[in-house]
Length: 323
Image (cartoon, rainbow, N blue to C red; front, side, top):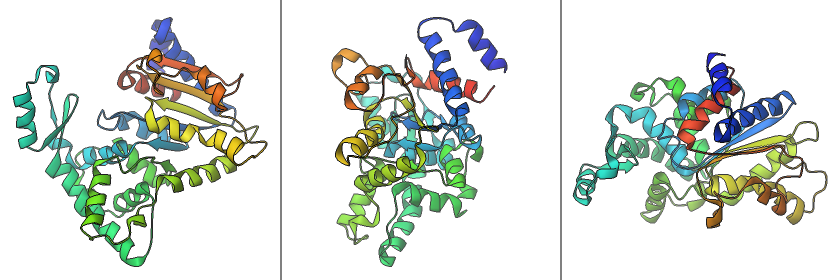
């Protein structure tokens, strides 16, 4: 409890206090027989959030994850190509010519971190293309995360791991067959590659990879089965965008579009965000706005931590894990 005790002693006001309140609310929700969804926007996998998120998965502190296609693939990129990554602490000072130099070296920059195209992206493309084509020829279809589960659990890439595999959140999720929702997967590097292979006819049926609409149908079934009055689903949102907005909408869809009764609202809500509310972005929407959309209720425990998720999320997880 060393980290928890330090935080509770020092984090007493403002966003620091909100962090403590949100973490304690997370624990209270789980203790009350609740389940938790974590949503990942931004570049959390490239920020190596997997170090703490993988442990949350191992310890059953999260029951379902929603993430962008980028977060899905970038955890695996880091798993197999970490030694080739380059960190650029002075990224704010790069000239256009220096950025062009990175491009020519096939180093794709995410803030201070460069992802090596050949060692990460193309290596994974070669492995996953085999699974796409095998499914395509067999007339089968799977969700994007299911294709990753197949290649991670096959052992094909074990010798390529360049980090401790216990720090890969997707590998831990695969071991538990954790449900994952990936809205807008086509807006990702592998989504672009998949489109290219469909255009070149390496893959005949574009629906070999299942769609976002099918993800929503899956989520509706999962939520209906798991959300009970005495066991609600919590929502821990990192960032904003489609990773947060897509899954939270399952509740108003069930109520308003399907006219179903007795579907519990989300039972806990927390968002880590640095977006400005007045700009009208979803990322900046305060929790109470979600009441008007039928997502949260008057009595839903609501928290917002306005800070950098790469700093805040591991600290919240440390408290939840009892560190």
